[in-house]
Length: 109
Length: 112
Image (cartoon, rainbow over all chains, first blue to last red; front, side, top):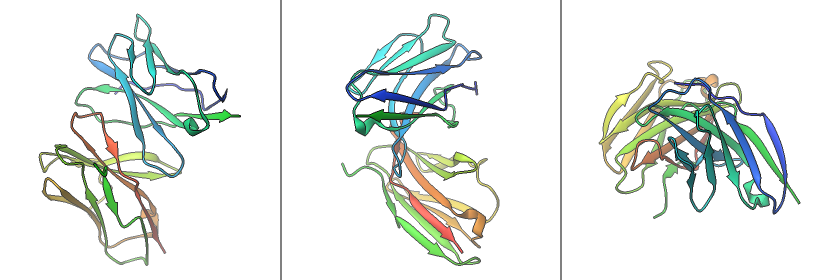
């Protein structure tokens, strides 16, 4: 599976957009970008995934660059409850999820 | 739906004892996954089932670990005998579509 690189931590002000970057320069053509998050003491939570096109759901938006070597997860209006570790994972549709260290997002009032 | 249900939520046992963790997946999900999370190693996939059949158990650390899924609504992860290094949080997840996984609350296992 392709590896990803994420910043270890980020801060965001409550109510502002949180933009979490992920580099995946070795991604192959049939691999998807998945985002999960883990709030303290809870199980991971699926957020969104995409292949080539940008995606949006009720939780977030996923922007994938045209060359697919990087992506950004956007939480449009971050709240304190969005404080969590965010994992960017690249894998095939039938591949295993390999969780790295992720980005610890702290939303501050 | 109640989501993925795991029991017990906390387990404290002594080295050498048998430990059984239980999972009830979300109804209708045909894939089930067992993960282990520690500070040192992060979140690791142990085994996954598709339609109750074990597909990939390459993540199971050793023969002391075994997992079963006797039917679509129940799975167990057993450790026998348990060791202190097995202390971790064990998550069960189920999925209707392979990588859109729904995780349970986890079982925190402490082996003394």
